Length: 228
Image (cartoon, rainbow, N blue to C red; front, side, top):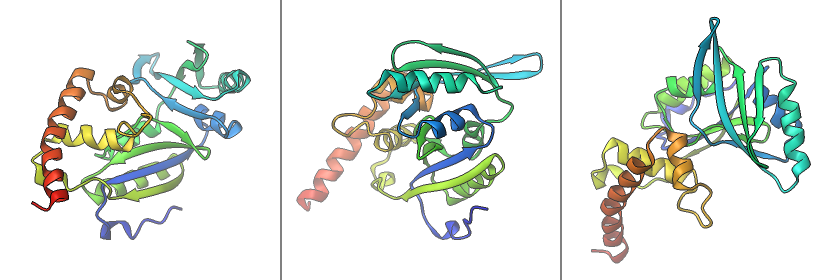
């Protein structure tokens, strides 16, 4: 049982959370290949077929060894819920599976803003999230506990107080996702196209929201640095 009684007393900006999702092909595969870094890079596609919900996504496998990618793919095929595993390139694979409930559903239902699609971390399915209310995090932890073992990797408040810059909700979401996913790091951990896909925003809209947010934040940051 994950203990989170202390959370209402913490004002949170960022949260990185993981779940060991029992009977899930993704958790099973990353547990068998902990040295790999696997990240979902596409928006998910949902289909209804014979009263079953089929989910499809594309995953990037980061490894210097081709045999690791092959091993991950073969492990994925063994799961009874997996319907199709289609290698697209040396490091990209498309997976379709039966999924009445996913960890992604819990994230969406929590009211949190998704900073990243699903990725592997220490054998867990992990997400980076942005939340304006601690209640959203508490709700997410509770829902995640229903599908597996939960691990809270970090709680951060690293984002500047963006409210004082007059950002819109979309601009705040764009900045939060960009920071948490490493868009501003060098080298970038994610490009604009990948970032847009992971948060479900069109590339042009994301680019425009980031541009407008930066134009509001940077002058204010300069004033603080110069003491004006």
